[in-house]
Image 1: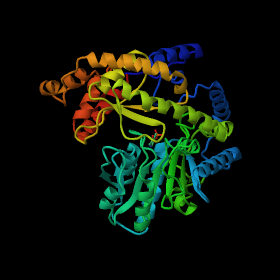
Image 2: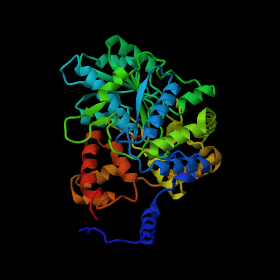
Image 3: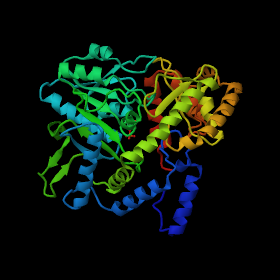
Image 4: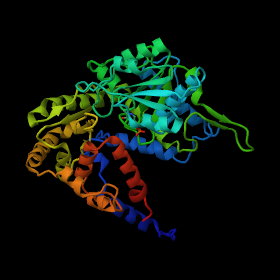
Length: 468
Ligand SMILES: *Cc1c(COP(=O)(O)O)cnc(C)c1O
């Protein structure tokens, strides 16, 4: 069993941390096409770090303690509201997209409860982010899933209207969705939301700092923000294409009357009155200050410049990926895209790219749900500078993947009992992280999603998050 440590010197500690991170990916190199949004600009990292460190030890718990914190939060809300074409909008800083989404779902639920005592329902396109499912689970809403068009990967208003009923509390549109980078029909859903008087949340977590700039650069971006009348709330993450450190997002509501549904006040204990506008209470103001500093530092021109690099890279990829034998899925309208291939297994491709020092994200899709295996790319500004070498390596990896032999998963499933320790050993996850995700991805693609969820939950609980 682990023992509480004796005191170590700073030198020893940092040596140990270095050792721990020896297998980590390195965010700043631009070799990651997911999880980090590299700009290649040292000055941005410097500005964010300086602001972060200056405010790291100030807490957002009590807005009367540090007046600067309230000023920064209200500034940020105003700036993003402007970006989202909002007027008289109310909003709050949160620690991430999941928290912003949870607040929107909470607010919608409270509005619903004013008129109906039934269990509220949330209608989710299959492409909606898991944060909505998590919010529904935490907040007691029933999820009603709607499949999306398998060519465009957008949800249709017709499909949503079919499942709307008097228990529907909230509709969700993505701008864009994460798996395919396409923007849902916000206008169509807005019409429904107004007809039936239902909350509509637009998830612009990953698109909020891209789509408005793409539009200014002349791209055809469908309306998705507060200019669409039925939109009740919008979530936008700073910690993605705002290029700020992780732990920074915003939730915007069309009005303060909507926002009040997630303002929490408690004055009936002997301690300080607790007033929270977000889920979390005590938290560092570091990421807030870094966001405030970076949005100020980059400004309209800065974000336009970075977005232009993304746009150019995207156009290059859309042109060259088909030449390498890949099919881009749907018509990606933002900074994300997914591609697949009948001849080149995406999971083996990801593995081969890893050997060449790149991180590309394998998406298992789901055979039972009719979604292909694919590779997801989140395009970053820095990729503009290295897209040539990326495409060269991708071609090399594709050639290797074409030749690679595939594991016969069905054969494996016949031999190994899914609930046994032997199975975990076989997958390479007995007591730790697997070296190779190929087989695991394959299983996630093939098996029914409920079964995948069950196995993952068990593995995470019993094997991964475990005291060494
Ligand atoms: C990132 C993201 C979220 C929220 O994720 P967090 O990791 O909590 O920030 C929600 N929706 C979409 C489309 C996203 O890309």
